Length: 182
Image (cartoon, rainbow, N blue to C red; front, side, top):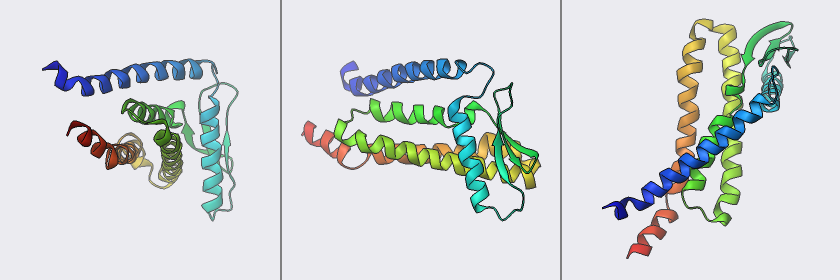
């Protein structure tokens, strides 16, 4: 009986081991910055501020600011802080979940060499859009901010990840598995 579930159990074992290791590495990475925001959070915040500036028709400048103490990066409109971005918003946790799934699903190197970078770019772009939209929600619909941050955009990001996973496991990969058992 255990033999028939071996592929699923191997997948889960690989996924959990990779997930644990990558989260451990990520935790050390974040802690290495002490009381300052990590470089990925600053990078994502600056990119979001630049994108908002590019698409905005406001006379106020949009910028990001990292205080001397604190792990937040603030996205400002003029001199006013509109949104604070913390390390959990930089997308790395979502990258880790995506990466663990793809690498645990018996990839050939030829396939994942193009798919992983493409998936990470897609997730990153959706994360920038998410933070940009949260900036506008914080400004114009502050009562909706907590719900959209915690549920609305989290669901959207994970729908994107599930769509990427579906793309990864569909088509030829299942055909190869089925033809191997025939």
